[in-house]
Amino acid sequence: MKKGLLLVLSGFAGSGKGTIMKSIVEKYDRYALSVSATTRNPRPGEEHGREYFFMDKGEFEELIKNDKLFEYAQYVDNYYGTPKEYVEEQRNAGKDVFLEIEIQGALQIKEAVPDAVLIFVMPPSVAELKKRLVGRGTETADVIERRMKRAGEEAKGVDKYDYLLINDDIDACVEELHGIVLSEHRKVSRNMPTIDKMLDDFSKM
Image (cartoon, rainbow, N blue to C red; front, side, top):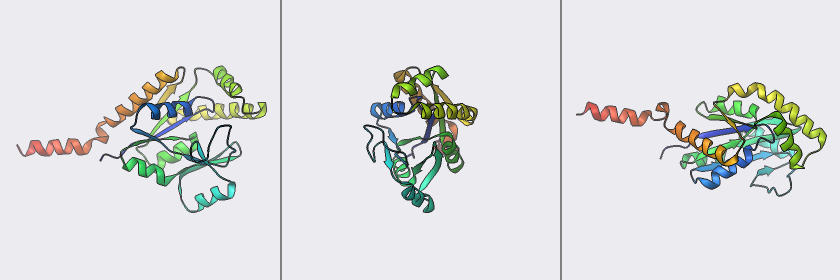
């Protein structure tokens, strides 16, 4: 069985990346979502083991110490990281696995797994980004201001990514993302065993 791709989806807080990932997994059974670990508090409706593995700082630092994470980073006073085991199990089963992580972690992933595909999600405008953050109603004005400042810093690193998605319409964005993944699977560099076998068969004619 062909191993699945490792797909990293990043974006500003409020860009809609989480909704895009959930939508594509619901629509196509070829995908799996990696569940990240974090020390931040759950938002209303979030469950441990579904949106995140919620843990305290001590528990998270044990994962770091024991090399149980693909990557980790600190963002707005909290740790976020990607546990290794689940990701590799899914990829080995042929699933394309999405990781939803911020830019620092994405670059760590790319260094550890060079053929990982990095995709950055943006809203149509900065004004729309702020509107979405305010509309969530889950954060204080101070936190929103910090997230906007952080987004401005993150924008400087988008050129390190392979693809850019502008999230103006969720359904269209999901289809565009699906198309990117299909194209990645068709890259010659990912299909050398098939090509080599064909060349070998030709040589035996």
